[in-house]
Image 1 (cartoon, rainbow, N blue to C red):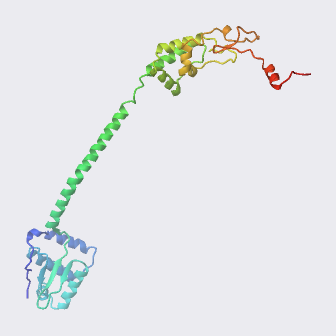
Image 2: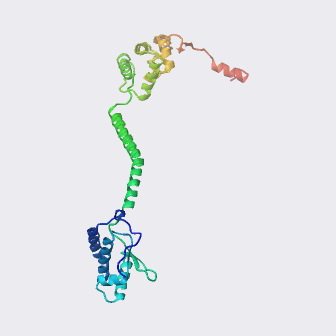
Image 3: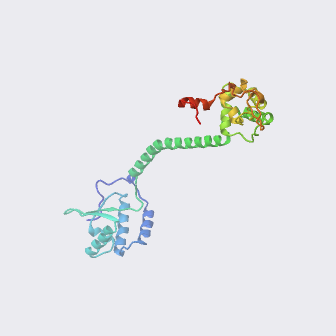
Length: 295
């Protein structure tokens, strides 16, 4: 019995086999894999049969036909060559039932099923349609972030609307308050306090009057019983600024209770416009003890 194609032969459209590519791939495979010469010959004969069948998935052929194609006289030699091919993973073999030839299937190197190809195309298309918008959105988002970042790097931070006024106030203080320590640089706390006063309704002219009144006040410049002097941060504090502008410290040294180095004093001592209390603390203590001091 000779070579016979199976009834369920697949049409050529179901497979895409490149005969020459398979042969080249087989030769490259042999460079790193051992296969006896009879098995190599059997592989070539099987490829010829599958090519003639239109690359059917399975080919039915009896041993006598293969032995004749390979010029073999002994069936055992064919079976050994076939077993080596099976062991190498190059063919699949199904023993035929009694009276039926054996079935063979080639394990191709470059086989690509049309159905598999179509499935891959559909999958790739579906994946692309699902993933591409996400990737594109991510790319757009990243580009937008880069644009925003570059824009934020180029555009300065929010401008301080009081910056010019703060600078003017510092210059006014240094030019008017010559009796006080000079300001070289305003701290952030001082700037914050000035902004708060400006937001509350004070103007640059109010600060000018504040500094002029502070410079004219002996009390604020330290001519008082405690030798205390006002500072810049004290002057710009909310409550203190209001008191200075209200004239609470518009008093010359003689009305402030200031004592000179010689021990002389001016008018009765006052502190922040309060009359000094003339209290005999020693007498109060003796009275609390319930008696007169005795020798």
